[in-house]
Image 1 (cartoon, rainbow, N blue to C red):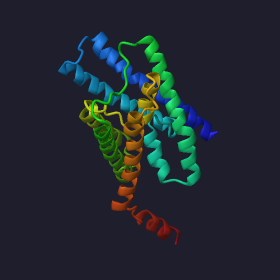
Image 2: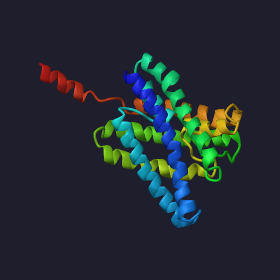
Image 3: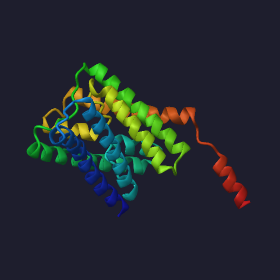
Image 4: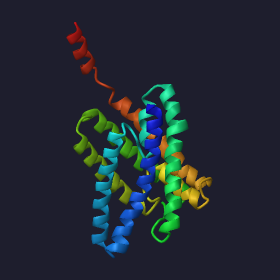
Length: 236
């Protein structure tokens, strides 16, 4: 039952995540009429941070639902093999399916607003960019989970602002996506989901960076045994 709940949560949250980005653009560009003016970019960034807070809250109340395959993959690496297979074979496809359905509806209803990440450099630079961005945010997330596991607001604030900053840094090169499911949704709608550029830049590079980030963090910051020692002393 918990597995089915997670699958549905991943599908719905991924669907909502793709729509949230489009609605923010619609509000700033069409309703406010600010376009790409500095004030419009500030409002767009602020709304993006609020949106990430909202989706972090959704993940909390759904007990683990997520819109990003890299998030669930980084957690599955540290778990058992059964959980890893469930994540790779079921949860990530559910996130991709939710993103594809969302993009299909966006293209039908708001074709002038919706567009996915665009690769504006060669494939090697694009893969390096997405890899570095992903490695940075994964390493940061691992550190926050280790240092302040109970501070929801502070952890979400730091993660949201960091994601926004990294997105801005990579927006002119690859779109600063750091989300294979979202990128897959737009690529599938455009018939580019099986191209070498899409697979290398938006899937292979982020996944490798996620694995490298988790393993590097474990190597440089191994789990402390204080809690185990305290629990043992209490039991004794």
